[in-house]
Image 1 (cartoon, helix red, strand yellow):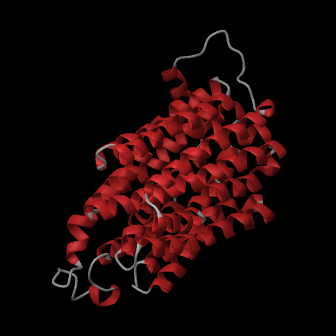
Image 2 (cartoon, rainbow, N blue to C red):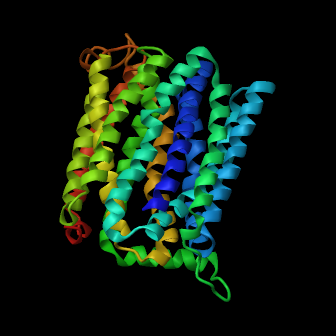
Image 3 (cartoon, rainbow, N blue to C red):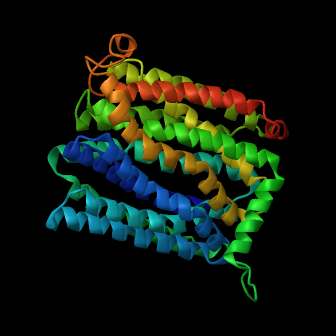
Length: 418
């Protein structure tokens, strides 16, 4: 556990930096263009390459030294940030350099993420998986808890360049942490020659095809990623329409306390082995309910409360899904399976990122203007004006998640999870 904690601290610091950059870029782009479409485009480019390349990263994590993959992934992803920083500071600025920079970073994160997930199995026993998952989520959730508040304060006294520089500096800490713990990380089994990538892909898909319960998990996590993708893209512009960047940062940080609270609870108490699916299903339904609440009112306290409860449910969904998958797959296949699962499940989030901005700008936002199609009907319930079309999209997303989970509950593979 000691070596896991060393790596975890490095990832915690790195995630805080990444969260600051993500928040600052969303605010910067929205204020520069006034378009949710451009915000979702940058989010898509920062996310899609990692997802699409994660199966290759997973195979590499099974073939080669996982510690070196994490170090290389962190090191080279920093090049994208450096390019954005130099473009804003000394170049012409604009959207295009940001698109290139976030894409470069995302490509190299694909090397690191499967290796990092597989490393948990290297360092810990099965009994420690649930608690470790809670800790991993605490580190991941720091980008929602700590980062927005810090970034909001920094943006009020400086500009985005300072945040990019601080984020770039955090990569050195992550590399140092992995280097300290490197002796205890698994080295790949020696083979006279490696199988082809295509054959290893087929082996991974064959394993998934044989396990109906894993297929059910993939469906659940894909749906979760799809609907969560909407809230991740829309929440900052929606709140920004009601307030300013600093307030958005404070609200996102306060709301994310719920996610950390859930992660801490799991990290301390864990979840009983025979309760994973029941907890996963219940948390998913509640997640949808709170998503609906987040779009119903313009009152910032009400929105904050709904988002707090929404984020509170996510660690339970993530932990149950992760543990159920981890115990179903042998350790020597963990890298490629995590890569494939990341690809299959997060396609839902890619679709959300690719579509929600355009839908918001062209369909729902105009409907909730004072003379819009829904202003005199649904608008009387959730409000009218800038941002309320995005709020209605959150309501629809929450309802969609609830209905989808009820449908999945009745599928065949779920019975093997109970």
